[in-house]
Length: 80
Image 1: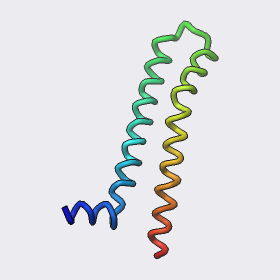
Image 2: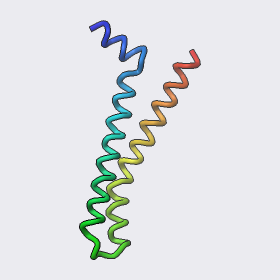
Image 3: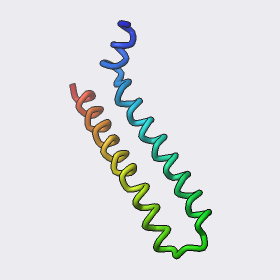
């Protein structure tokens, strides 16, 4: 248990796991967006774009925020 606590505190394991999980979520949403665009080819391009933007915008915002926190905490750790 000491090893795990050391990984979380000194090596930022939680931050890295959080970042990787959000990146996987972004990958999955991107795959789904491609599949959706392929299956609804007969609709207008604007309709497809609106649906894809509604799906990807929240995930990309979460990814950006997570990366911002990760890089800020990493800079703070390196300055000490």
